[in-house]
Length: 138
Image (cartoon, rainbow, N blue to C red):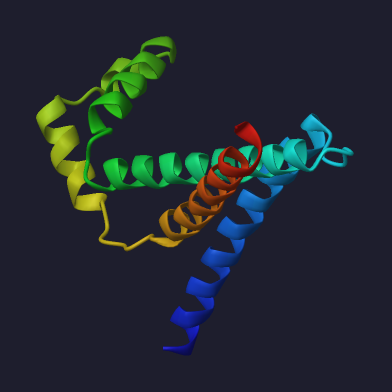
């Protein structure tokens, strides 16, 4: 039980670190330290909302992949690679067998760390956007 908690904590920390690095990259490219409070709030809102959106998109792709939605794409890419390998066509299999094999390999896992951290960052970006709009846009 203690091992599972450590793994879950590590997942959350990694997702938080990735989102923070994305936000810091946006802050750095836009020049965070300016004299205008309105510009600083706008840059903060951009950094948090973009990093939150990217984590949410990643969580969505993980969910789609976990449900087997990307098996067809992997089948096509595998066959393209096998076409260029000498004697690669000997490993060719029918899509039905490939899908059956891959569905057995899919394991049931609840990877909600990217979703939760993405929602938090996106919510912070949304709140900062509303603050900027109410205080400085009018």
